[in-house]
Image (cartoon, rainbow, N blue to C red; front, side, top):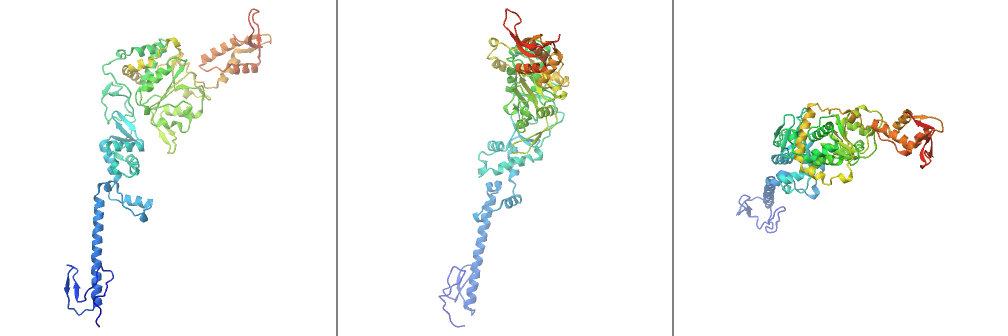
Length: 531
């Protein structure tokens, strides 16, 4: 092979130029040494190019290995497994889920156990609860993030988004070790600020996460009180005597009702209705009960709202439902059915907005107050039996009302609730059956027929068609009708409705002067009241 230009040969793929083909390159030590080989210039140049390319590839692999090691040893990367991505190499959502599922690390597991280390958590009926000093509180997805910030890391380990933490809620719900099933024969207890009273034996214990309770009264138990007579609450005792009219049987019922509303779990197949006199103390009694419970333990649904589709969602967290101003309205079939099933301990499906419906399995205590008797459609003896009537029949004149009575009663709350637990124990001994008070129970006021049906019943039973000259004053007719309604425990119809029905019956509505010295009065010709 003839001579070639030794100084002008360029090796593609290399980062150098050959100055002389008589010099060779050692790939191991990177030095040049003279070579007297007879090999061709082209072969030597190709060999040098391959050696240089191999060296560069080796360095590249070493650099990548170092970067990978740095990523894996980063504690934040280990916890959240964030991977660097180029904008033109983004994974699809399915690919990301697959990659995370195959990851060496399990962020949900680590975060859940970090939270469990600092908090007492329970999963009850598919919901997450957190023990806060005295009882287990229900947690939402947002609240569990707040709890993580409070108990584990206020900066959430530098997370760039909250996706992992929202998933944490669902992960905890699936933790078998946290799942708790409420015992079927749970002991009756009353949760106070200073401990838990087990009602049957009167045993008082300190709060402990092992006692799974879901509410706590805003009052303290007085361990020194050994009988209801020893409880020192003179203002409330006087109030109870006034609203009961001094009757011991009614006062005992009121104390039993109060005791039942305070203890857990609900056992009786009944609900309470306070009525029906105005300014009789219903609101004071009911407001006192409501203030004893934390806000999240109370729902305030009226009987009508119980029949709604989404209104009952608040019952899922409630231990008691209180509605103290029921209007005069007839209950529909849906409301009656739902109230019967809840008080009976039967499961009821609760619809939730933008979520799956959830079944409510436990009983809830219900306290209602109204100035009007209940009205339902049709006959329903089972509903009638579930009503425990608390009579508030003595209206208190305005000049005798104490504007500070509620504050005075609230100051006695510790003694009041302590006394009420003795009556709750008494009610448990009676197997949750209130002693009957016949004259009171007849005033339950559950109208199983529309008011107009009772009006026609009165007209047919107590009115008689006679000659046209006979006159019955409206006041006499109305007084007789209202007495009939009171005996039946129902609401009377309005004067306009009464007049229309009596005219339809055969009476002629007109005025007549009964005495020459008096003005004419309204009444009906052609009818009279039967003796």
